[in-house]
Image (cartoon, rainbow, N blue to C red; front, side):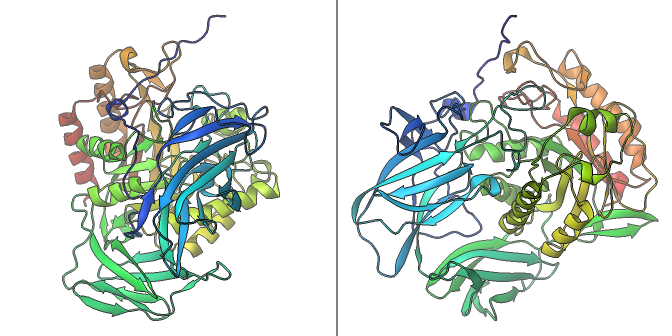
Length: 580
């Protein structure tokens, strides 16, 4: 059998890459001055154990070894060499008295052992796709050696894994392991701010400041401190305060206004930002609508997988996120459904500042079954006993831990207005209990408990996936979201990853005919459905991804298939139909 022909595509940012990638500050909503970026060339080895006998390669961090940008370009053999071994060095001029040095990385897949100057500093747990923060106690003035020993096992379906698979193809993508986000150091006081909880209204933002206890590493509300905002100090009481702008300027996709502030707690201080906006469900004209700042909005959305041809999980430059967001806005879209992936915080910051609403999926775990999870629901079986969908206690515990961690990490971003718990039954269990748990964690956002099908109980929306038949608004007393549809294919071979295989739902010979069919789909099915209760529609999808060529942009982001003019006109008609 002839081997499939695949091509390593490049992005413009990938072609311009140097040995100091991703120099942007990695945590825009909690920014400190004293930090060290460790991205660049690291020694690298794939080994049966750690440390390895020798480091025989170099790798460009923060790109995963499967990616072309890393300089490795293959998937490690997880059975023969389960440990991915990374080594670098950094120099400290002095050790500030009363300060701790923290090592951060937003993405290390899946488990990592951290060793500094030959001493083990800690081990990260497989939550939030492997992000870690560890205090380095073994540092010294002068040169320091840092090693990360990373272990990944994509056969373990209890760990949330999303679209990554050992056997890529169709809607499944090249796997990712090892380091895939910025590695950085940060000086902090022993007792320091760990996170902010920002909850906005239309007139104020409640800020809750959390700190860490240096003895027990447990979080607690800041016992004393203040926020500097609008030229005056706002004291913290039990770790909280409310900031009231004199003339409230609301955040919208058209006018994404952000307010900056500085927080001081104990000896620590950091910069941050907030926005004023609300999202809720409200009955308007006899129909349940999702309202942004009290006004109905049509969520004109694209499915966004967050994959890149040369970097896979990580684009060549943080600027690539803004380019994707602006490309979607240029086509008239106001929402991205971030599909089964948690991005670096740069993505959400760019959505905050550029004005892009985000529907955020949690990352699935558990086993996927093609017949149960795709074929039968497509034929109309939209209910299935949840006890048959997710079986093990460990899978449930890890999913819930991942969900909680995601809310803590992303819950202060104004762009995120909607959580998706389960997608198409994959890994689904106790959806009503999960809904109740998430509602306690975050009562301020819309919750889609079961996107697509297998509706079993509590949810804020009636969420449907319809690809192979005309969409009709279901009879329901909830806002209706068409959370996936379309998937039209226009394959441009010069910009395609797989020259032999094509995955999508309807094939068109060129960009013009594809766009005409897309607009007809919206005119005949979406626009008439809005007066009947449709509140949003998520077109599949923003970009091509490997075998999938159903994107509005090519996988390498070099070609936008539709003409923006008619797309902007369509967006205006959708907005007018909702009456916002």
